[in-house]
Length: 114
Image 1 (cartoon, helix red, strand yellow):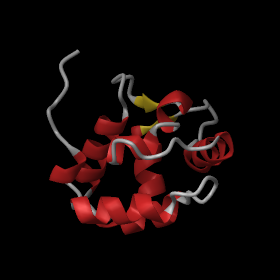
Image 2 (cartoon, rainbow, N blue to C red):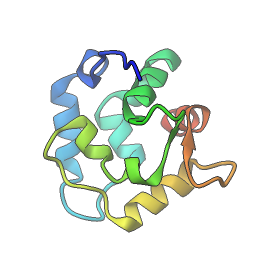
Image 3 (cartoon, one colour):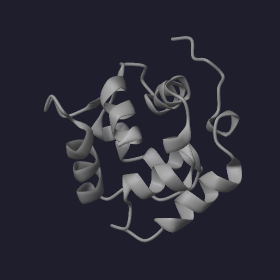
Image 4 (cartoon, one colour):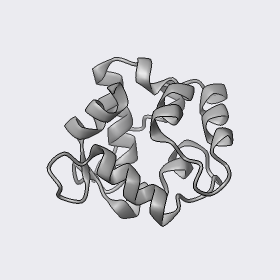
């Protein structure tokens, strides 16, 4: 499938991304609210947030599934750690309003702006 050649650094500053990833380097220290604030995503426009969602939705399914979420930090910085199972599950449950086990674009936007 054709994928827009957009990178996260065209939306967020590389320095902010680095700071956000460094902040949660230790296992089980990932907090999505703090991460979205540190990387600057929570202050972006709804369209920019949608663009970031598209980058994170690796298989273009319209959802971020648990398998994609596990590698969430690596989408921002190659070589970053994977999220632990506990982090992945709490990340999904925080955003998954319809309880389908995955995060849709609307759910992602609500979560980022919360």
